[in-house]
Image 1 (cartoon, protein in one colour):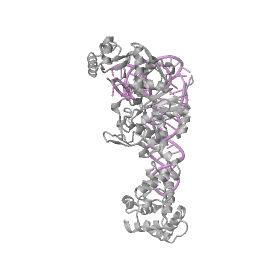
Image 2 (cartoon, rainbow, N blue to C red; image 1 turned 90 degrees about the vertical axis):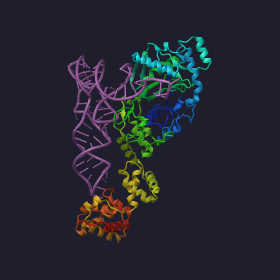
Image 3 (tube, rainbow, N blue to C red; image 1 turned 135 degrees about the horizontal axis):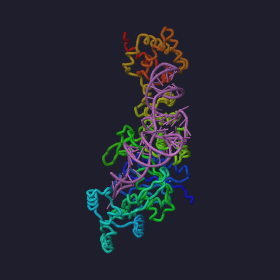
Amino acid sequence: MNREVRVRFAPSPTGALHIGGVRTALYNYLFAKKMGGKFLLRIEDTDQTRFVPGAEEYIKESLEWLGISPEESPWHPGDCGPYRQSERKPMYMQYALDLVEKGHAYYAFDTSEELEAMRERLTAARVVQPQYNSITRTQMKNSLTLSEDEVKTRLASGDPYVIRVKMPRKEEVRLNDMIRGWVMVHSSTLDDKVLMKSDGMPTYHLANIVDDHLMGITHVIRGEEWLPSAPLHVLLYRFFGWEDTMPQFAHLPLLLKPDGNGKLSKRDGDKLGFPVFPLNWTDPFSGEKSSGFREQGYLPDAFLNFLAFLGWNPGDEREIFSLEELAEAFSIDRIGKSGTKFDIAKAKWYNEQYLRLKTNPELMQYLIADAKADGVDIPIEKANAMISLLKERVTFPSDFWRDSKFIMAAPKEFDQEVASKKWNADAAKVLGAYATVLDGFDSPFDAVAAKALLESTAEAEGIKLGKVMQAVRLAVTGSGAGPDLMEVFAILGTAEVSKRIRFALNNLTVVA
RNA sequence: GGUCCGUUCGUCUAGGGGUUAGGACGUAUCCCUUUCACGGAUAAAACACGGGUUCGAUUCCCGUACGGACUACCA
């Protein structure tokens, strides 16, 4: 049997997609690409009480930003639609009923109060696992304990009911996880999970099996939090008679908080000092805002590269991979087993690497836009020079303008700490002379010329250039640190440099 | 509590019965240099513990500890 590989990402639209989910989507995408298969997206919105407006659009936009858009989805349907479980609602009941007929599921009429009472009773009796299972179901109101007539009457009269799976009393359930190997669980530790809810919607357990089967899913790649319920899913495939096409499972290690205490969750928001979402998100109910990696200045390729390496590695020492290269190198058996702590420092490093790979014209867009937002227009040529100056020094695109503003606006004040340490009579002497030299200079003024001129000026004054260099920087930029000064001079031009020097000479006092 | 999963430098990880246990991020120092970065070099830094198996275990097995997930008519 050689089926085309089909994998799916199946988020539930209950808020912003968090990065763990993004990584799951990425691994699914990479696996599909690697295997020449299809990556699809299915919206798991069977819990209408948790519906959050905008969440689905958020998922779509996030995947688009990263360039891992699914080939089949609610907005690009393939042959297996609909791709929203709420729209598939009518088809689930027949499958649940099929299970009831086969004796693998049953109706249950217990109210939530009765369920609560059962749990309390069992807890009081010190039962280790208070759950609805092969033992306790005999004491509950269901089609196994009620007479056939009463069940019919209840169903006919519209009594609310759920359909539960009839978990076998003792059976060893085995599953061969692609990441973890054989996992064995005894059915006696599993409970009679609800398959159909009283509102007529299926639970995740039923819906994901039915949909994966109908959609021809060959591999289920999902988070480790699903491992405990995987045996139930295997059983369901068996009950349906779909074992021969049951997908292979791969349960991904969890993304943990940096301190190692628990998995990263949506609720962490920005509390950890970094975003947990790909894009900015405002909760429509509480109005709470959370920042996203995109808005923080992370480049999609860098973010993807970083995310891919959280739990997977290519087995060699390469670190930088484009999406295509990731797909080419990807394999499930190189995914680690243990949970992965999130390290934002590495994400920044990746961003720096990708920023440096970009061309000046690409990067100029950021600089020009940010400057414009501050009401400053930067000519193309100057912008290009400014990018070259800063490219090796920035982490985020927004750093370009932040770190080069001083070029577009002469300093009005000076870093006092640097001034007190470095500003002196020698510096003033050299600068005064240099300004005069600049005023009379009409050859092409580049970094080399600027430096040669400065050196000869200092020499003429009998002062070592190194002694006053910091003061020169202070006078022209207002600060003691920054990119290559002579390059800055070249961008500024002789007139501007001279003007700034004269301003500094008039406004900085020499401490004796 | 129960079930399941996991455990190599601070972090992401490679490796695998005999290795100086490798790389990357981060950290520190040095070099380069007009500063800060970049770059280069160097350094500190790990096989959770206890039993087996074995000539030999970080690697295989079993326990223990620790961590995590799950334990809803949520996904």
